[in-house]
Amino acid sequence: MKTAIILITVSFMSNSISAQESMKKIYLEEGSVSSIKHNDLNLSTLLQVYDEKSAGHLIGDIYLRVDNKGESIAEFYIAHDQSTKEYYTKIYKNYLLTFMIQDNNQYLIIEQAEFGKVFALLNNSRSTIGSKDDLVEIEITDFTHEWGYHAPPGVENRAYFSDVHYTLQINVRDVIKSFSFSSSNVGDGFAIDIGDYSLLILSDLYKNSSCLIEMRINKKENDE
Image: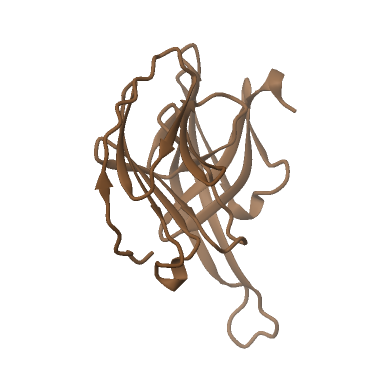
């Protein structure tokens, strides 16, 4: 994404969030950097909104960057092209970060990662779902993009293919297992059995040597 020249003002918000709060909704001001303190997180956010005064290809686009102690942990890019799938909730450590647009205002929602909620897992972090006594740790340990044709040149009607192979590492009560699957496997009801829990893979996205997997982890007694 090309950089648009905008005036960035810096404002600091001190958000004291108690350990008892399960969710925090934070208003995001356009074109400003905000600082947010939450438990062990020291977040800063930058929201950029492009309109008719911006470069033509950016009209209607919204970009949110979330850093923790100076390290980028999540990016949200809402494209004007409605055919692009958006991932509004991403997981970091034991937190779900959700970008919400409501009544033309933008918000960041911070909440503990709990079972039964949909989130996108990125390839550059290890995350946990649940609480201390009921915890699932998960990370993407490997992903490989393969593409090409099923037949050599000259073969009539040869088909092009593109597939991404993933490996997930899951730790439940210090029992570590790896599960492999391909993007071509992902579809309605694609689930992985992880003992007392089930992992439902909803979709995936591979782009520019990075990836994310949209999923939901349920405790089996709560499965739909």
